[in-house]
Length: 104
Image (cartoon, rainbow, N blue to C red; front, side, top):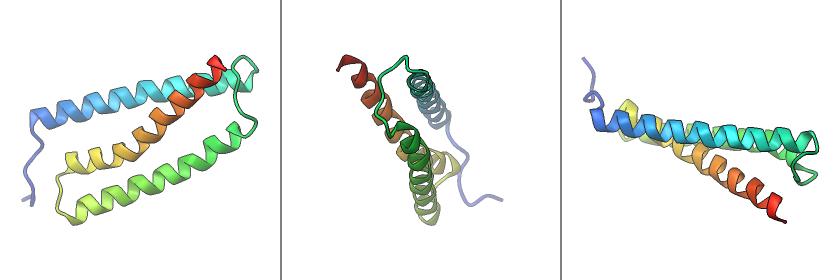
């Protein structure tokens, strides 16, 4: 029926863990940006514009990653991991950059 095998338990656990970590980092970024909008956290003047424009770029990167994985015949779990990779990379970079702002 399907041209690929169902994901293994290890793949599903890895995908779930990576998704959970990404969501926690995203919440930290959201909290820091909201605090910045309220003047409670030091952020650069262009932070609001940056948060909008980078989402589009991350979405495009994720779409390209998924399409590349799909064209290689990857499983759905592998495609999901491919989509998470560029998004998580940006979220992690944002969390680190915003956290450094407080130490300046």
